[in-house]
Amino acid sequence: MFAPLLLPAIPSIGVDPIQALKETDAIGLLCILALLYLSFLTGYHIIIKLLELRSASNQSEDFVAECLDGNKSLPEIYKLSSEFPDSPLASLLREAYVEYEMEMREEVTAHLPLDQRVQLGKTSVESALERTIASEMRRLENRLVHLATASSVAPFIGLFGTVWGVLGAFQALGREGNAGLATLAPGISTALMTTIFGLIVAIPAAVMYNRLSSDVARLSSQMDSFAHELSNVFQKHLLRRSPEA
Image 1 (cartoon, rainbow, N blue to C red):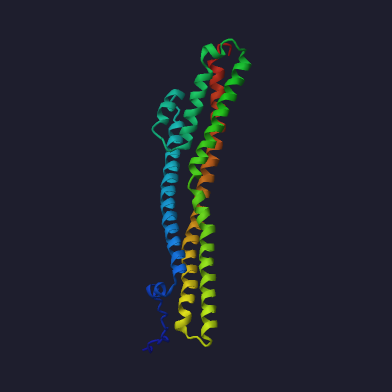
Image 2: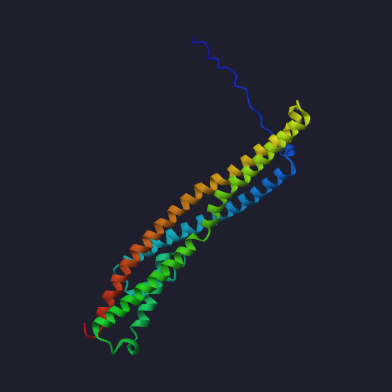
């Protein structure tokens, strides 16, 4: 029989955050409260943006599947697009179709030659697509600026608390000479706790900013590709609807 393997006992390092907070001075507590508030806002924006982008992505996939159904006409797809309010691709089609119908009104384009009529309609549709893409990008990016701000500002708030705490510890050491740990504890606690809270806020904000920015970039690429396809589709419809075609 093998003798049981005896591992050396690993000493546990106990950290009491409540005690550390009690030893933190007023400025340190103010920094921690500011970081807690920033953390709450960051978490709120992350959750909302995750839900928004997931809905936009899922509805866009469903809408594209409907568009690929060859049994539906363009007016039918336009009516169907209202069932996908969070899809940027559906918004592109709605705005382009409205512009297309406005340009194809007989009193507006009937007197124009075929090539001018097609070019005017194509230009109007492409302008509507560009405006919609810009609007949808603003909507998709509207909360990312908070995450970028939190990831850059939180470390500086923590650094301020760190410098303040170290300064307080050195001042206590200068006043007392051979100061004990009890004298240095408030300054050290302030320095370490504000650093910890700054990292707690900054790291998730930076990670989620990169993750969400990647999702927005993917949707932006989908919008560009879809807009190009829509431009070609509407150009073909312009030719078909023109009496000279």
